[in-house]
Amino acid sequence: KAGVTQTPRYLIKTRGQQVTLSCSPISGHRSVSWYQQTPGQGLQFLFEYFSETQRNKGNFPGRFSGRQFSNSRSEMNVSTLELGDSALYLCASSLASSGGGETQYFGPGTRLLVL
Amino acid sequence: AQSVTQPDIHITVSEGASLELRCNYSYGATPYLFWYVQSPGQGLQLLLKYFSGDTLVQGIKGFEAEFKRSQSSFNLRKPSVHWSDAAEYFCAVGEPSTYKYIFGTGTRLKVLA
Image 1 (cartoon, rainbow over the protein chains, first blue to last red):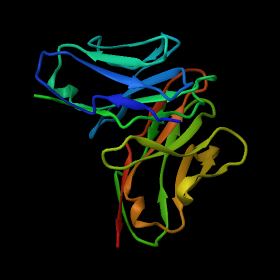
Image 2: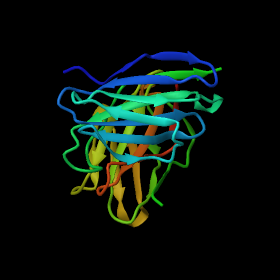
Image 3: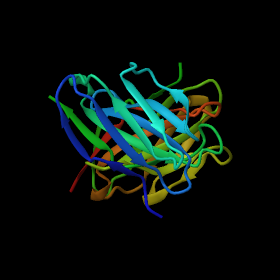
Image 4: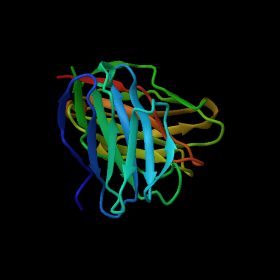
């Protein structure tokens, strides 16, 4: 079974631009979570989607948004990029039949550099 | 608020030595507990998890972890470290009532030959 895939793997953007990242979960997984990883902050939870609905959201500004499609693929969007948005963005999928107890499977991440 | 603390940012051990990585959590009830490993440029790979039952959990690559409710800890151990274990290790808590996971800031392990 193929793992979680994320595209693109690397991105360079400039301040003020927007960016869209994509995540394809493991086949059969219906939950997708997004995390921002930076050296100083570790992994910070962005949001989680299940059956096209956002079930939980972390403490990030409204510039960060996401969505999930009917095939469980998910995208996250960051508008008006700031230098501090430079990070590794990780996507994780799970079956999500129960809350908080599912094993999450992570993709390799998208490394975003904002100049 | 729920939190996960990994007090050691960096740990260096010699190959063949034993290893213990510390993890403490703050949560009102018994959470679901996880340890993940991240190699450079890679995503996170699950080492082991604890949901309930036996407090000593066995994982992949020879790792084990022990849940101690009285200490709110879930420390990761390995009796003999291999050079390939050099990576960053993350402890995480899954909240049973939500769909949220909280990660510690990670411990970077260096292995000396």
